[in-house]
Length: 377
Image 1 (cartoon, rainbow, N blue to C red):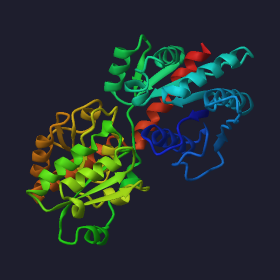
Image 2 (tube, rainbow, N blue to C red):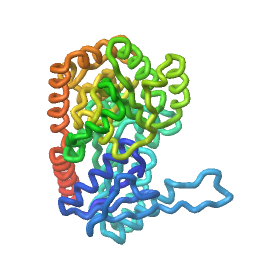
Image 3 (cartoon, rainbow, N blue to C red):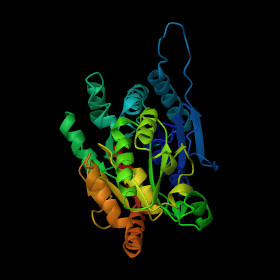
Image 4 (tube, rainbow, N blue to C red):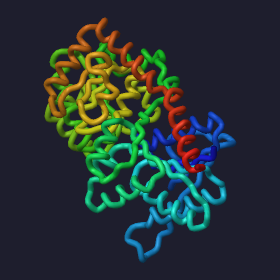
C-alpha cells in the first residue's frame, strides 16, 4: 500500500504514535509518505520506502496568521495525485482531518477518489473540539471521513457524547516498541542521582494545567515523609514556573530535579521506581505505557482512558483526580516493600507487552484493507 500520514511533527503523543506507526508500516513493506510542516521528531531514519513532504506556508502582509490548513490541503492534493497514494491516514482532527476532507473533495472533482482515515487522539476531542468555534468543523470532518479510529474506548464515548455523529469508531490503542524500552543495566546512572539508595519517582508531561503537575509535587512531599526518595520531572511547559515556586514553598529543592525535554526518555525511566500521572484527563496515557515498558509501576488518576491501561492493584493504582493523600498512600504501599515493588514492576512490564507495536500495527493494516475493500465495491 501507498499510505499518506499527516500528523504534528512534535514530541506530543499523537505525533509520536503517528510517526512510529509510519516507520513500522514501512518496515512491513508499505510505502509511507509523511506530510507535515517539518520533519517529525521521531522520524530518525529513512529507507527506500519512507518519504517526507514538507508543507510550505507563505507569509503575506495580508495575513495576520499563516493559512496552514489551506497550504496543507494543497500539499495533500499534490502528493496524492503525483505519488498515487492509496489512502490518507490523518492524526488529530484539527486541522488535519478538515484539510484532508477538503483535499478529498478537490481530488474527487478530478476523478480521483482517496479514502481518508481519521484517528482521534484526545485533546482534539476533549478540549479543542468542544470549543464552539471548532465544533462544526470537527463534526463535519468526522462524518465525512471514510473511517475513524480512537486510541481508547473512553475517547470513543467522549466523541459520541460531544459530537453529532453516528460514525462507527474503531478503537485501536496506542502502542510502543517494547524492544526500545528493554531494561538495561544503568545502575551507575541511578547511583549518581540517588547516591544513598533513595527511591526514584518520575513524571513526564508537557506541564499543562490538565496534567496537574502540582499534584505530583504534593504527592511526592507526602511520600518523602515516609520513604527516602527523589523526584525527576521530565518535560517543560506553561506550568513549570508555578511548579518551581511550589517546590520552594515545600522546601523540596534538593530532592527534585527538573530535567526538561528529554529524548530518549527511556534512559531516565529505566532507573526509576514509580511513575506518577495525576492528570485531570488522558485519552490513553502513552507516558504511563512508556514507563510500564521500563518496568515502572504507575500511580495515576482514574480519568479518561487510563483505567484501560493501568490495572488497579496489579500494575499500580488508580485514584480519584486531585486525591493527593490517596496517591501518596498507594505510592508508599508499593515502595515500602522491595518484594512488593518487584511484583508490581514485573506486572507493569507484562501489561506493556500487550501493547507492543507488533500486536497493534497489524490491526491498522487490517483496518486499511477493510476501508480499501469498501471503496472498491
